[in-house]
Image (cartoon, rainbow, N blue to C red; front, side, top):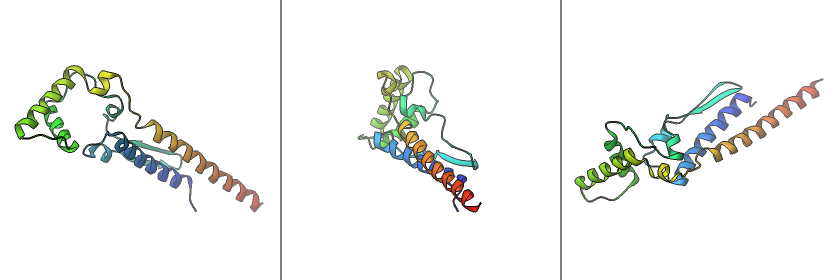
Length: 151
């Protein structure tokens, strides 16, 4: 018979899938490295979590200007390639990466500069809460009914 731990595990895994799908839907997808960093765990029948890299908030609100890693231009180059942006030569790729890195370092990303927010987590979380609530209510109603029937 299914138990609360199984329900929680299944729903957390569905939440992870929904967040990844939402990332793709809104265009916040490049190489898949961020999605690969999402993990779920159930530590007891009543406690579970979903986690990911510390920078996932940047997907929703953008990156503010300021200090960047020393290898930031290389990160941007990998992003350009993963996004499939067009460039004619390695030199042009380096210039694009340097230019984008400079703008982000000095002004922040497009989302941040314009004050935009892309919903990646709120919608999947709401669906998760609704599904979990329904499944747990059904589970406990059945448990109560079975307990009463045994008496």
